[in-house]
Image: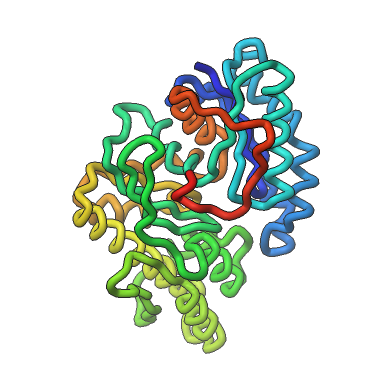
Length: 328
């Protein structure tokens, strides 16, 4: 089964052709990072207009890279949510239009479920169930127990800032370019341990997360001016990684998970990958960096499994901008 998948939930216009839910024959991503960098964050209206300009060329490029035409496609998938409404509408409606025009099955996919299924694009055996999923992105930080395909239970999540959002805000406080994640990671390599100690919000008795207090601590540290940027970057990253890896490893033990699946843009952070591998009691699966950040191949991977179960999205189904794991 070849699925043409389209993703436009935020500031990347992406299309891919995925075969049997496991092999990305192509994965094309047109990023808007440079466009939004001068604003220090994504501007929704700018993002949606850019998607309109890029959506058709990106789809054509994905088909060409996969050595396919629309005649070779068996189904079409599009990100239905969550995300920015204007951005979602561009890709979702493009996918629906192609499916309708070609008489192909169509399915709308949850963006966060897509991040999890990036782990099915990794070569080798499929992940084993039950699995504990750590979803860490710019807008979400969730611990989700996955008993099987499409079977999710959210155990914990962020009470305020998501991990990726905290990286962006801390990066801005440190005077680093947008997006903050990769620039903090780079600066941290020049830092290393020091006398600076930033807080860890463990929220004992829960598997929830909170990063707003850490962000405030970075603000006060910067204002005091006692520590250079690389040292603050190092300690900030250590604080986030310590809590993420600590809670994930403990929950994996308690639930008897057979795998830990890491997903989302923050999963590209090398320090987080290292600590999860070191602490978790079961094998940790992490997609390659190109499938951690937003892409359409992960949407195609989910779609293949759901289409095999006979699922279809009705024509009247609209996008959604907030996420509910019970409704996935």
